Amino acid sequence: MVLRQLEYLVALAREKHFGRAADACHVSQPTLSAAIRLLEDDLGAPIVERGHRYVGLTPQGQVALEHAHRILAEVENLRRGLEEIDKGLTGRLRIGVIPTALPLVSQLTAPFYARFPGVTVAVVSMNSQEIDRGIEGFELDVGLTYLDAEPMAHVKAKPVCVEEYLFLTPAGGPFAGRAQVTWREAANTPLCLLTPDMQNRRIIDGVFRSVGAKPVPAVETNSIFNLVSHVSAGQWSAIVPRQLLRFFGVPEGTRAIELVEPIAQRTIGLVMSDREPPSPLARNLFAMQLPDDIAALIQPPNRAGENLGSAGR
Image (cartoon, rainbow, N blue to C red; front, side, top):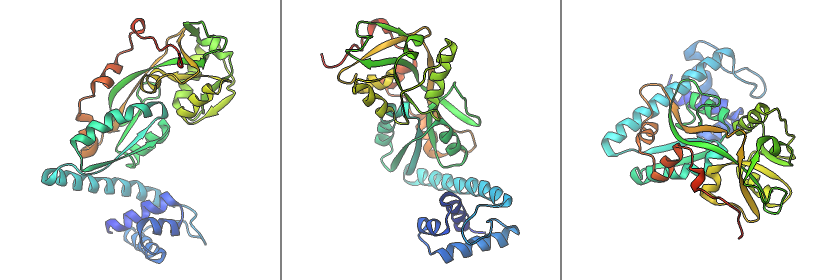
């Protein structure tokens, strides 16, 4: 058994097609197919369901795939650890980020890159379940996700900020003169919300249930920025994280109003696998001190001293 065979197996499971897997590995399809057969011979077990095209992995293949991910990750960590000693940290830092935390991530990656310029950074927008699978399957080094709503197992966590929610609504709408809106009132307006596969949506649905409300969204999207742009169109309102508007401001023609009864909060933070030894890339990101403008968000904001107001004045 050689590492290349394990890499081919991981690529085949990811691409679900022999030709695409071969292209991803920069080899011919016969070369990849032959290597998979050699791996089956080495392990003494069938790995791939046989057919005219790729069908899937056998139960033995699924076990082999789990070990392949682990072995390749350990080898990569070994390489990065040795390179860190010889010439500093290098490699590709893979970060999965929930959509509502996308405005925060550059505040973490910028100081990291300044300290480790030999590292490239890949940021991918994912829902929390995809981040969980990515960490578990060694496809991500770090996640930026919710820590307390649906806590992940087998991870180390570092709080980054507390997420609170604002009611973003057209400036000339029925709530134009209001300083606060209750969740029950928000439930009775035409809402644009994230799709149900997003944990933010499940959190918001849970808050609505706590006050006996069940809104029917008029628009659903998996993009936090598309959420905001729909409110700017003047037809809908949305429930958005406070930090989104702190970084990008209140869009033209809209108002951000406090949501009360209740005031809902969730913690967002970094997660990495708790396996030892840790990934050098994840370990160094976790060890960095949070920038001041991020660290301030770990505590809930001082509402008395903050006035988001409306845009376009």
